Picture 1 (spheres, rainbow, N blue to C red):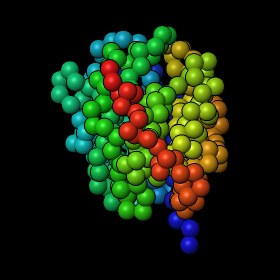
Picture 2 (cartoon, helix red, strand yellow):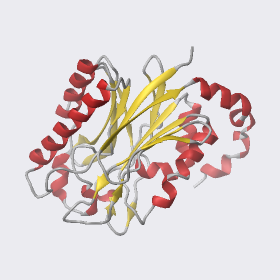
Picture 3 (cartoon, one colour):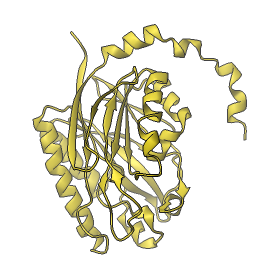
Length: 289
């Protein structure tokens, strides 16, 4: 019998104007996503992943300390606790990307992982932080992640998380595979004209090089007042052969659901022996400053 895992990705436009109280901004997006999580659960999804910092707009388009108050602690902050209840209610695992505060002045772009019984399994902190004009001023908001590349065992599948800009770096993608990831989720916020032509190139290449599934998410819409470009959606699932097996629309909110056949990982890795043939003894120069 095939090892099938049904997964859902949620891409969604921001709801409330960023000039509203931050709690209002957050609450409306959380409510919107809870409804979409229910939709994914009704479709039989076992895992659902939300987009990068799902509970608001992509505020890194400006540099203002106001957004520091958008942070929450993990795992004892209100959003993670709420999503634990949602996961428990629907018996669905959830990847929850939020803006994390470790202590005053130390903030991370983080994804918490919750299993289908509502248990907090751990978190991944975005490792590579961009500072790219125009409108991607992330070093103003986030410290680089310091937790390495953890893999989370849900019992029936092992998953990893890579966040947005991380996808441009093959090193972490390889580390996740070596740590046992069978599905790697990449919640993102990226706009047309900057990297859209890379969207369906880099991550299928990671899938092929490492013999695992990629689940890539991008938000949709244009966010005023910054208007840095159109978030082009196009969330997708890619199999270990580098084939995109399901893809969402470019402009609309969507819950994208697909069955991932984990037996294909074994089949592909028996054909392409990339892990066997790699030469870490020859790569020392790659990590020298």
